[in-house]
Image (cartoon, rainbow over all chains, first blue to last red; front, side, top):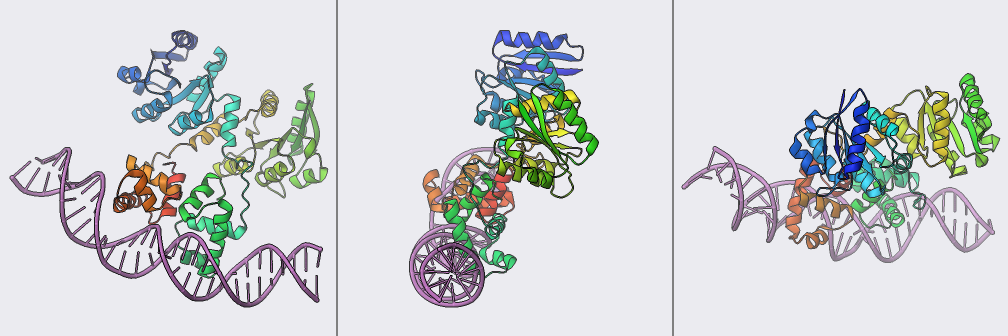
Length: 207
Length: 207
DNA sequence: ACAAATACTGCCCATTTGGGTGGTTACTTT
DNA sequence: AAAGTAACCACCCAAATGGGCAGTATTTGT
């Protein structure tokens, strides 16, 4: 039996889902709430296996709510449900512990399937969201900063916290030789110190 | 009409897929290859919409092949097909431009569905792989480094390349006040300089 | 063959950094 | 009331960093 909580401020939507899910023999909707705050008071989170959580809620935002929910029960599978699918919110929710992302346009069958999948180690997502998530692993095409092999290696060593001297030993160059490369790296990345270079390199997935 | 290439060294698997896909009225398998090298010689990559690419191949590994394929045609949707689903390969392939990840155990219907989805902006993935991808956004539970608000803010400013002096102006503290926080950050992160701190913070998703 | 680019090395110098130590205030804990 | 702590500020000092400039060896393009 999979125990479900629903947190969604639209009454019709909430009750619609509830009805659909409760019809399934192995699903049980424990409770419905209109806001995160109400859900926290309900104290049923530790009993839940899957939580359907709206993003846009009165009071606490769903993307923040998921964090608190996961602090109360780490094993619960939180599924965000949303009409918008803007990148920032998606990634914030995922970072805070959501494991899936559904559109509010889901059909009843898809909803049931998503709950099952979420409970069995899957991560239901609508196709375009899946693509966005996947794309975030790739380098953005317009920012193709082309570092040489030595530059990449030096940058990696910088990110590990090495000093110029330390790096020079690793790559068999003089300290000034290392500086030469670092200056070139700074030019290519348009930065002017180590930390900014490392931050940019990691964000652009160069190292 | 969706044009498909198949790169897979197992003859039976390859031909099985080919038959299944070619039966669909809107799918057409342009060619089948046993290796990446063979596919590159075939010169049909620019004509393809979707490519099914095995991971474990004789000669060039699929995870590297995808990179070259995407250099030849950026718009092509490359779907990795694999028996293993170890993390390292998954993320390497995705980083190199793959947009989906199928298990070799897919049913014919799932395969057809995956090709359609891949072509229409989706990212087909088997459930456990999707979960791994999603989990990679989250902080690993054992490394919960708890930074204070000021520390987080200082760390962010460091990652932007600010000097202590620059940071002190932003947070309305003395330079030594900033140093106080930075020392605490170094202790918590177990590092001893800016770049390493920034690298660790980004990798652990603290900022 | 010659100019240009690439990949270093070397040195000067001001600024930044990291480590150590010590002090103040405010707020808890016991 | 005493002890502890967190959150600052301050000063010393050596090492690391970043920018500028000059020079050399090798490779590359024409």
